[in-house]
Image (cartoon, rainbow, N blue to C red):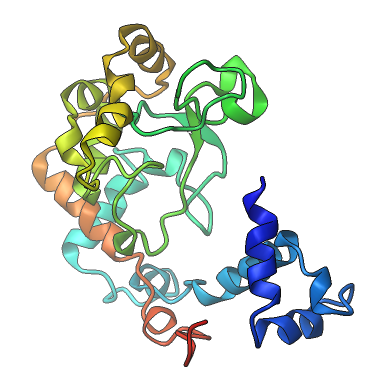
Length: 252
């Protein structure tokens, strides 16, 4: 936690942020009062507006424009809400049930480790709750603009939407077949060895496999391609091309 005060000081001593924070928050009367909490709240307020997406082809289709989706996208939508059962978790306006599920995503890196674990384990929600029922479970991601947010999975284990969808269809088989070459990381030999150490822990990997709560589903290659096409139909149009704020004129 020692890094937060350093970052906060850097922000509050940089113009024009010093006065902008005082103007934005009623509880602040001088820049010296700015903390990392205020900075986090400012970032959250920005993100809540800047990347709001409500004008995708899918939205236009729901509003009655039957021509807004291509035929592959329509087939993918039918699979998403039907046979593929994606909507059982990716539901609602944001296409997420906001719940936590264990998908058996390939673990690497430090992960979300509990404070008393002797080594890095990517335990997911259990790292916060300490509840065994939360083991290896991660929040269902929202799918709006998902085609713009590669790589996929909470740790970026899959470079493409197709790879992520195939993992959902058969998590155990996908986990067994996954290798470190699937992820783009800097070439740092001493660090890479540590990053993938968890894959050699047979007991830990067995625990991850047993936590998976998804039954395998078979889909043809064309079905998967149609699902990918539908994912692209979730990309905003004007809200992405002309965001409310955009890049600032200057960067501090």
